Image (cartoon, rainbow, N blue to C red; front, top):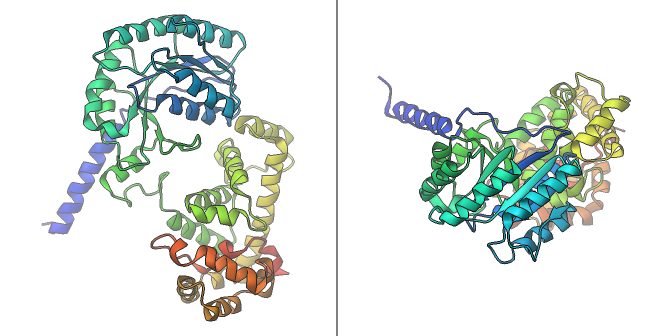
Length: 443
């Protein structure tokens, strides 16, 4: 017979798998077609964050090279057009709306027709926020749908509304066919349990999660990771989008110990940096590492590469045709793609040299990593600063600005500024302290 612990694990796994199945209706999400006009109509409750989500959605496609536009057909809420106009101006995305026209159906029709004529690929229509009891607004929503003929209707769900959102989603779906769901306001205490009801009511897949106020706080939905957060089970989403950045870093270091460093490894390295919060901003200002803005641009470039290219099974440097295509697909410039490839080549050579010489293994010595972590707990101690300087090579010490620069880095990174439970291996610590040109260490 299974032990009590084993039974608990089996029950937990069964519940987890069932919840994953509930938020994953197995129906494929809408996929926009490049080179054609794709009209996406957004609907949802008033106050659900719909207009902000539209800006995030526009940003997501814009940076990936799509020709994006927005139409404000919300004449019910005061200031709706001003908000959309402000967001569109920040994003430099064309928009259509009117202060004088009171008919949202006419605004939607004229705006969509204009952008179709101008051959925009993503045309986003913002509609008035409504409640299931407001029959007039539901009739208006149906009229807008009839004139703009959207390729997909997206229901925006507020994560803070709980299970009550299920009835609302059902009412929307009975009025118009909801094709996709976006869950917003997941940056607070809400975990989005109402998403289970929304998916069950509409049978539509969740496509994105809104995790903050900024335009980039927008993540593609991953069922296992979402349920892991919902249940507070960090380990169940293993290998998915929300994997622990420190665990990912360890796996990366294991590959680097073997002298391997593909474009996919470089991608994971930048993703890990982005997940380290305040540390990533400080690391971005160090020599040899891309700053926060460049990190995001590089990640967009990686998203436009094929699996074979990320695994370095296909040679990209010198392949002008693919570089042009990757740049267009990621919304970046060719020179940025070439810069990324040069940086990767440099790191690849450095990792191969260190792997063969055993230096990478020395850098990941657990005893040294533990010692460094202890020193970082009290970064203001002169004794700790001196001990840390002795553990670094002369080249690396020079790169961080000598002993004074090292002391400054330790104060910025150590003590209260360190994330809870943060215990990096030595190689990771070295990278954060000032690496980056570790190729100089080899000379």
